[in-house]
Image (cartoon, rainbow over all chains, first blue to last red; front, top):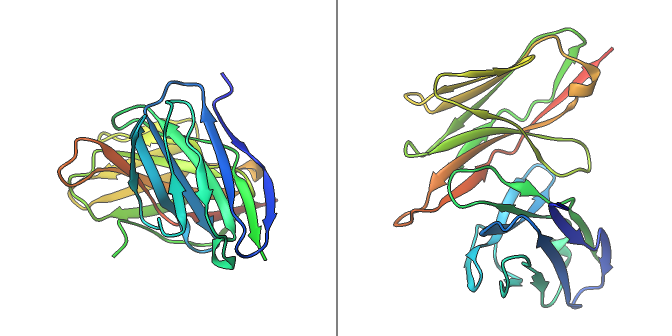
Length: 112
Length: 114
């Protein structure tokens, strides 16, 4: 199994540009989530999904959209990038219940 | 108040030292508990789960006190390779939901020096 994969690893955007961060998992996990990690702030939940076709907002959803058309994929879209969205983004997946999460390697995003 | 609180450190200890990290959580209905390790510029990875009776994995010992809503991690005989950030993670049920959600502390930074 590849586990959780994320692309791209690095990205530089200009303010106002849009982009999609890709996330895929091959473990047939129902639960997938997106976090951002900023210095001194820890991991903050952006959006999550409990299954195909079902998504919900986390702690910091503004400026981000998600969709879950398949179990495997959970892309994160930035519609109009802002410098405040400069961060490291982690995708994670887990099975239903209290099981632990598996994280992807992260995407480092810089918005100028 | 944040759902999960940790002392951010940093903790700087010599090789061979014993170091302990503490964590408190706000929701008494929390289901499960974990310690994650995160190396610099890497993703978080599970270090160990924390069980009510306490559990040990080699040099690492985790304790849970549900009455005080407190979790701890003890590292004995510290190694240089233990240098990392340690994240306290709590699974809490959402309101009206049967699905748990993970809440992360901000992490405690550990540096082990030779």
